[in-house]
Amino acid sequence: MSAFISVAGASSLAMITDGAAYDEDGVVVRIGRKVTVAKEVPLAITTRGNHGVGQAHQKRLCDAADYLGVDDAIQSFEDALDEMAAQPENGGRDYMHWHIVAFSESRGLIRLSAHNMPFAFADGEQPGQLKEVSGVYAAGNKIDLPGLVAVGVSPMQPGEDPADYMAREGANVMEAMRRKRSEPLEGETHGGQYVIGGQCDLTVVTPAGATVKTVRTWPDRVGSLINPLASAADLPRQQRRALERELRKRSA
Image (cartoon, rainbow, N blue to C red; front, side):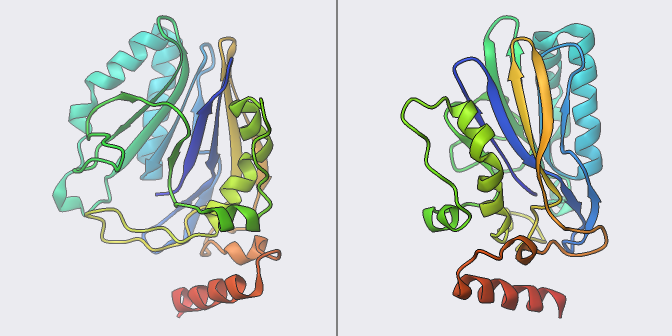
C-alpha cells in the first residue's frame, strides 16, 4: 500500500496522493493518478490496495455521485462495505483503504475513511465502518521531523490555511514519505518496500467541484523497483548510503 494525506481548510479540502502501482515484489506496473474526481459534483476518492480493484471502486462511487448526488452515493458505498471485507486466506492481497473528500449536500465539506482489514487502525478506526475524520489524516509511511527537514519542508505559517499549506508543501511531504520503506501490515505476506513514486497529485475539493493536478513527478519506470535515490541528491551522506545499501539488498 502506498500513501495519501488530506487536510481541511476554511473553504476547501486538499489531498495529496502518489502515482505508482506495483506488484508484490515492489516492481512498478503502472504510473498514473490514484484518485478519481466526479464530473458533476464535488467529490473525489482515492484508495490504497490492489490498484485495479481500487480504480473500479473509485469510478463506481464517482459515477454514482454524478447520478444520485453526494449523500446518496456515500450512503450506497457505506451500505456495501460489509460485502468488501478482506478474507484471511488472501494473505492481505485484498486489503483496501478508501478515502473520500467531498462537499455533502447535508454536511458541507467532509472527509471520510473506511477500510476492510481485519483489525483496527492505530486511531481506533474499525474495519467496515465509514468514519468522518478531522485534522491531518495520513496513511502510509510514517515520517519524522528529520525526514521532513531533509527534503526542505517548511513549517506552516501563522494564520496559513491548512489546504493552502498542503498545496504549497504537499509534494515535499510526499517526497519525505517516498524515502521511507513501508512496513508490512498485520496479516500481510509482503512489505518492507519502497512504494511511493511516479508522481504526486494534489486534489482540491470546494463547494463548486473537485479538481486534481500533478505537482511533482519522479523518474521511476514501469518494470523497475521504485528508486528513492533518484530524487535524493540532497540527503545527508549517511542517509544516502543507508538507502543505497537497502536498494542493493532488494536487487540481490
